[in-house]
Length: 269
Image (cartoon, rainbow, N blue to C red; front, side, top):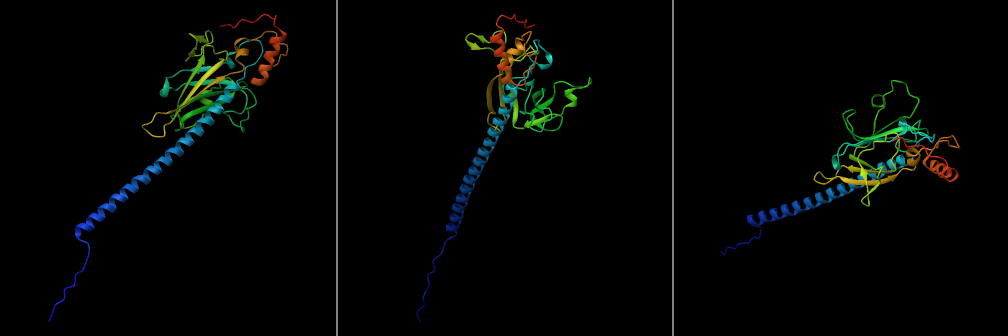
């Protein structure tokens, strides 16, 4: 009787282990590739949101500075001057600025006093008051207040952007705007009864990644009514205050053309 032997083919234990290792490596590589794509997409979305928010906040601030209000009554008044508090440089800067303006920029359409003179204050909030940090704004009427009115206590701040971590402001030197053929920027504005001609504003946005530098957004803004505030005309023929930067510029140009022989009032600085 002849015995028959059947040879069965299959995988050895070593082959199975090698296959599992190769499959694990491929899955690990796929996971890291997918994670890199997701992180890149999230970083791109975060950067897009940061840029959009930075542009919006900066555009609102630029519009508010250009709509700065100053009464054309032939004299200077501290109540309508520009104020700058310097606090640090670069990404550690926590400057605050304050000025009187007219219009809806920074305060919104629902503000009841947007079309009348009101003072706004921009500063970096550390979240100690309401737990929210970022670029904050306060706004209140320029007049018609009780004697005990205190904007620091009576006006609630509103966070414009939690992504803004620092703000640096510089103004063009009033007495010597150009020095050594370069613009002479100053960190202080000592003339609290007037408005600077030009302001340089820099916002630093929270970095998308922890090891990255903050995003820097910078604008240079010319303020139309600076001349009225620094060089008030006495004996104004209109006797009315200008209600916007554009009308103020037209009034100033007309007075200059019609009253070139009128003696100028001293600045008082």
